[in-house]
Image 1 (cartoon, rainbow, N blue to C red):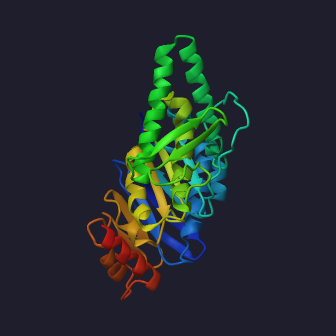
Image 2 (image 1 turned 120 degrees about the vertical axis):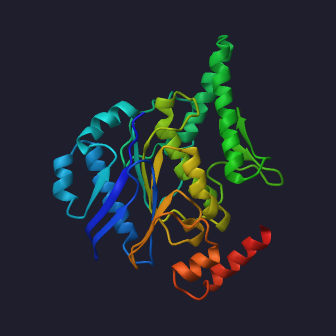
Length: 330
């Protein structure tokens, strides 16, 4: 399988940012965290990168150069001219999650056959149809078993078992179960000591995680044929990845995403120390101070990241309180 990743990012001019070169890796997927204080240009760079990638991906190379290359330029592991053809052959994933993302999945009133697509545009979010997809799978499993197509039915049952395992991992709770109510056609998440809840009544943090995870899963489902194999290559840009995440999730989100989607290159913006030191295979670039960290900060404690990297004497009162609570529990 041909990989698809950025090896070098050059910011020509994005707002006040000029002539910045960020080398990644020529040989393998290397993730990138863009950091800096509010107003440093993180969101602007992420948006410009997403626009540029989309033009290349869809074959609008000349237009990409005219409209986007004034802002930035990138080098890929493959010749840019080959990308549209390779994307069609290997179904590369390309998506941009903005900072103000809100999880939403339509609640179906009846069962309908869902037609998944080979490719979803940057502005499409297939996780909207996730619950519909679950319901479609449940019906397909029941019909297959009724028609003595045991292998097909068992494959779908195994898919749901793996989905439940995924939820256990995200919630960090082995008591989590996914329950289907055949009367209401609804799916509920069961967790010991809590009332049943659905995908819409999750806390903001878990909704923020599932918003990304379920969307990426849906983008791959047609190609993976329900194998629960999410190894398709691609590039995912996420603005303010820590949005809505409590500290434990900030610490675990990038390690989880990079292991569950092993061939995706994640390019994210963040100013959370819990994000910055959560990953080893990452380049960090501070847009405000023009500091390049080539091998991550995962061996630096949170206090060191805050006091050294951000050049401040102490955490903000709110973050310090949360940090101390986190350390006490762990």
